[in-house]
Amino acid sequence: MKKLLVFLVSVLTMALLAAGCGGDADKKDAAAGEQQVLNLFSWADNFDPEVIAEFEKQYNCKVNYDVFANNEELLAKIQAGGAQYDLIQPSDYMVATMLKLDLLEKMNMDNIPNAKNLVSTLQAPVYDPTGDHSLVYTWGITGIAYNKNYVKDVPDSWEDLWNPEYAGRLILLNDSRETIGMALKKNGFSNNSTDPAEVEKAFQDLKALAPNVLAFDTDTIKQKFIAEEAWIGTMWTGDASYTLKDNPNIGFVVPKEGATIWADTFAIPKGAKHKELAEKFINFIYDPQISAKNYEYIGYNDPNEKAQEFHSDEFKNDPMLKIGMENIDKGEWLIDIGEALPMYDRYWTELKTAK
Amino acid sequence: MKNGKLMVAPAMLWLSIFFVIPLLIVVAVSFAGRTPYGQIIFEFTTDNYLRFLEPLYLQIFADTLIVAVITTVATIIMGYPLAYFIARLPKKWQQPGLILVMIPFWINFLIRSYAWVIILRTQGVVNTLLMKLGLIDQPLQMLYNDAAVMLGMIYALLPFMVLPIYVSIEQLDLRLLEAASDLGASPLTAFRKITLPLTMPGIAAGTILVFISSLGMFVVPDVMGGAKSALIGNLIQNQFLAARDWPFGSALSIVLAVMSLVLIILYYRALQSQEGGKADAKDVA
Image (cartoon, rainbow over all chains, first blue to last red; front, side, top):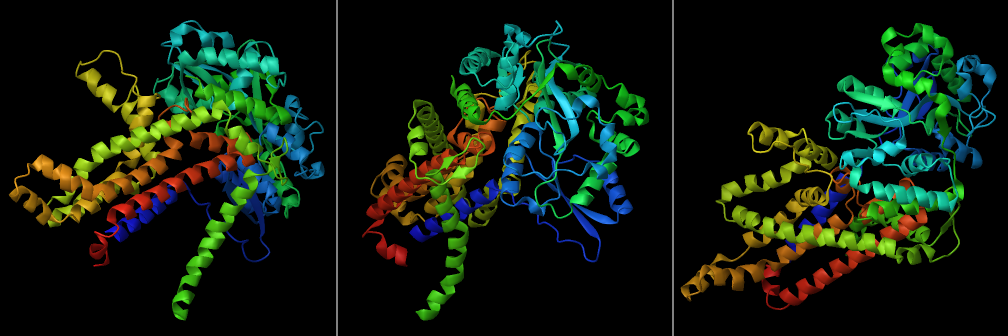
C-alpha cells in the first residue's frame, strides 16, 4: 500500500510538472544545398505568411520563424548565444538594453535603401539615437479604450479613469512600466521618471484606483472589452483596432496629458551568420507594395510613408489606427531606466498585495 | 548486483544532468548579485534571502499559505466522498470512474482556466442563463476576485486528492468493517475508528500533492483572479520575466522548494510511525 502511494505521488507530480512547462519546438536544421536560411526570432503572428513565402521565393532561401512571448525571454536567449538567430524584433526599451549590453550589430544601410520610406518621426528614436542598430517595424500608442454604452462622457484625461462610476469596470495593462508610466503621465511627469517622490505619487494614485480595477491584463484585454466585462481601460492602438471590429461600441482616445508610445523593431544580433540576408529581408518588408500587403494582414499602423497609397480605404480609415497616427507627437518612448527598475518592481508588487 | 547498478546508470545520468545540475545552478544564482540590466554577478551574498524577510514578501508568502491551506481542506472535504463513492462502485465501474476524474488532464490547464472565464464572465454561460430565467436582472460579478481564485485552485487540484484517497479506500480490508458491525459499532463509529485511520495515508498523500502544487500556482491568480493579487508563484514569475532579478527569483524558488521538502519529510515520518510494525507484513505481501 505504501509503495502504491509513493508511486502515485511520483506519477502525479510528474503530470503536474509536465503540465506546467511547454517545450520549445525543435529548430529545423539548415535546409540542404546552397539554399540560405534566415533565422527569424519574433512575436507570434507578426508577419503575413504570404509575404514571407514571397521573400523565400524571390531570394531562394528558407525562413525559420521562431517565436518568443516577451522581451525578457528574447534577451535571455540572445545573451545565452544570439548567433543562432539572424533577425530579432525587440521592443524599443529592449533595443536600448541590448545596445548597452553590446548585443546588436550595426546594420549596413546600403542594403536597406527602403529604410528611408519610414515616417521621419520614427527615424533615430530616443532608444537608438543613431538609428542604425534598429528600425521600427510596428508601433502604436497606449490610450484609453471605452465602451460608449456605459461611458457617456468621452474621456480626454487619464484622470477620468478615477471616476467612481466605473467601480469594478476598469482594466489596466498588466505591465509595471506601462501602468506606473500612465499614473506618472496623469501627474504631468515623464513616464521614465526615476525620481522616487514622483514614482511614489504615481503609486499612491494607483492604490486609490483599486476599487475601480476589474483586472490587470495584457494578453486577453481585447476579449474583456468585446464581451463588455470592462467598460474602460488602458489599451494599445493595435488592440483597439482589433476590438472595434468585434464590438462597434468601442471608442479610443489618447489623453491630453500624453501617453506612452512603443515600437517593435528589426535588429540583428551580434554574430548573426546571415546578416546580409537579414538586411535584404528588412528591405523587402519596407518595399511600399509588400509593406501595404503585410500591414493590412497584421493590422498595425504602417510606418512606411510610401506605402500609404497602396493601402485599401478600409485600412486608411480605420479609426483606431488614425487616432494613433494623429497623436504620434503626444507620445513619449519608454526608455531603459536601469537602476530604477527594482523600485518600479517593488511598487508594482506592493500594488498587487494591497488589500 | 553489479548488473543492477549498471541498469540504474541511465536514470542516474538523466537525473543528474536534468535535475541535479539545474537545481545547483538555481542555488548558486540565489546567492549571486545582479547588474541593473539583469546580468548575474557571481559574488557571494545573502541579500536575496534577507530581502525575502521584508514584510511585503512575507505577506505574500502568508497569503499563499492561506490559499494553499483552504484549497487543501476543501479538496479533502470534496474529494473524500467522491473517492469513497468510486471505490465502493462495482469493480467494472471503478476504472471508468477513475478515468472520468483524469479526463480533464487531457486538456491543457491554461485552456481549462479560460473555459472558466467563458462560463463565469458577465456575458458568460451562467449569467446569461440566470438572466433568461429572470432570476437576476444584473449580471453577477463572479470573476476576478478571491472566490474565483479559490474556485480555480480547487477545480485544478481536486483530482490530486481523489486518486490517492481512492487507492487507500480501495485497499481497505472490508472484513474489518464487518467485524466492527458484528461487535455493535454504528456505521459512523466504524468509519471514525476504522475507515478514517486506515485511509489516513491516502489523505496525507493527497494533502502533500495539493498543498505543494497550490504553493507554486500562478496561472489561476492571473487568469481567474485578474492578476489583482500576487501569490508567491506570481512573484517568482515576475522576477524572471519583468524585474530582471533572477537571483531574487531563484532565492524565492529555493525557499519554496525547501518548504516542500520539509513537508514531504514530515509526511514520510508520519507514514512510517503509523505503519511501522503493525502493517509491515501487509506491505511486504
